[in-house]
Image (cartoon, rainbow, N blue to C red; front, top):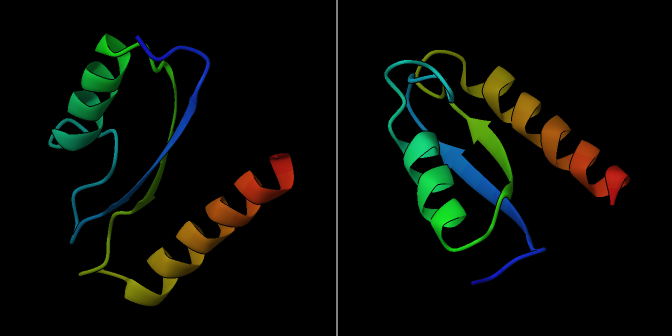
Length: 71
């Protein structure tokens, strides 16, 4: 088991918001990674690329910048 490791998942989708009822990916990844012992999981998502590409990319870049500053 891999314990004490931080995981950052970069995810992109056309319009399914991360963490929403229709989002299968984040829950599945958290479950699989948790099974392997990795519970410190951060999702950085660009989840509305078909709707607002520029705004979505800006928000994802802000999230990455916040992670870099927290480290």
